[in-house]
Image (cartoon, rainbow, N blue to C red; front, side, top):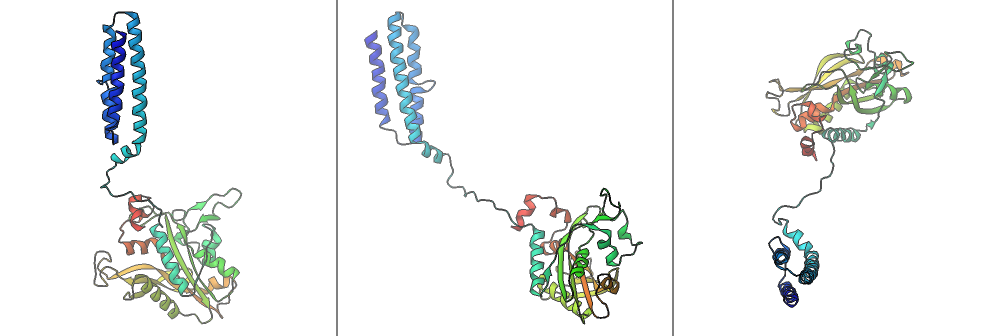
Amino acid sequence: MKTIDMRYFAFLTDRLKGDVKDVSSAGDVEQLRVKYLGRKGLLSKASQNFKLIEEPDDRRFYGRGFSEFKKFATSVIEELQAKYQDEKRIDKVDLTLPGRRDFSGGLHPLTQVLEEIIDIFRGMGFTVETGPEAETVYYNFDALNTPHWHPARDLTDTFYLDIPGDDKLNWLLRTETSPVQIRVMERKRPPIRIIAPGRTYRKDKPDATHSPVFMQVEGLYVDKGVTFADLKGTVVAFYRALFGPETDSRFRPHFFPFTEPSAEVDVSCLFCRGEGCRVCKGSGWLEMGGSGMVDPNVLEGVGIDPEVYSGWAFGLGIERIAMLKYGIEDIRLFYENDIRFLEQFD
């Protein structure tokens, strides 16, 4: 029994060595593993002979041959698996599929529009100024000639801040970027030619066209001999640079506390070019923002003589322009951070 059993495992060893010579791929290695070490392989069948051996010495010699062959077969197959590991990995990849591209961040659509606006005004000689978003009532309302009865001061319209040790209604989140104009005029003398972009806050209920947080750009030009014609020329040039040279503009009388006279600015509809459509509600015009000549009271409040200097100011919403440029009908999309929406603007 000893001679026969040992010859059997020697035969399996020689057979395995011969089979190894035919291996040329990861698939061949797997077939070899199944043949010798698989659940129904040759080694599994050899283990069934233990119950047929009656003599303890014969069983011991058979077990030694079994263990030595199993160790040898396992070692050989593991070496082959390591050799063809890279090929096995490639076999699992469908080389016909397109490669994966690296995802990189992009500018938010509002940032893209803001940068375009800044570039246009810088080309006109304007500089960019910024200011705090948490502002005092003085800079947000008083210095801008806003009367105490004005509805913008109401608790239902403005986010007031309860700061310990201060008047409860003395601080607020700015409702527009106009306070930056006051801060600039306090520290600079004319000529002043600035734009003030930034985030603003109002107690608007979120819907398709309103948001409690939104972005504005304010413009200010103060110098000797500044007229309403200068305002119209600048605004028309800006919107034509932004929307195209065929864009028309119009000014409608309006009221703003910090400008006199004041006007709302409209531009010809970008979609129907003035013929009337659903976007412009058939009017052919789109409302863009407010403008006007700086009220003399505002100039006096910052120490600028209104008898010597005059100026104009205007404001516009970044979201409004972005919605028109990209055909977006819901302002909330800008703030929901849905990557499926934002990646369209990369």
